[in-house]
Length: 196
Image (cartoon, rainbow, N blue to C red; front, top):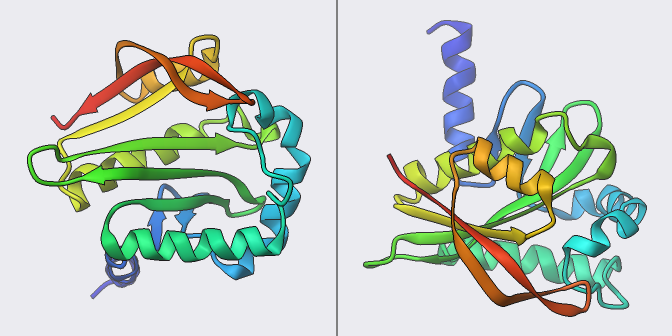
């Protein structure tokens, strides 16, 4: 076997357990682990006000070790049940720069799941979330054998709309009072991507 074949073989084995997905040479997706706690706290804290308009209201202990432990346990449980997969975006040089997940997976006749994501302000506009979203779609379609992926974004989130369209998502309509974001129920644009 060539060196490249050996590397790809190792990557395939790692990806089989769904805990790490490789986007490109600079970016990978990893399930949150306790080793990520300190940097996750730093990145989320530094981006608190940037993320506030796009996320549900943070609880008072949102950055605590206890909350992160609960989060890691939930990630592991969801992955075991194949009901959801949550990842941190890990950049080769910068470390944690964001997060993405495939949640609310429904099998049977639905074969669908919902995607959510966040990215640190300083890393916006550099193609990282495009790479992560493309990779999570491949994982949903090829590994989980889903047919339909869904997501939603606020009507004034122009960056997210542009990202979704560039990753082959199509707008389906408006979800009235769809999610509670920044402390209030808000309408969202609904998007989907169907497996080719």
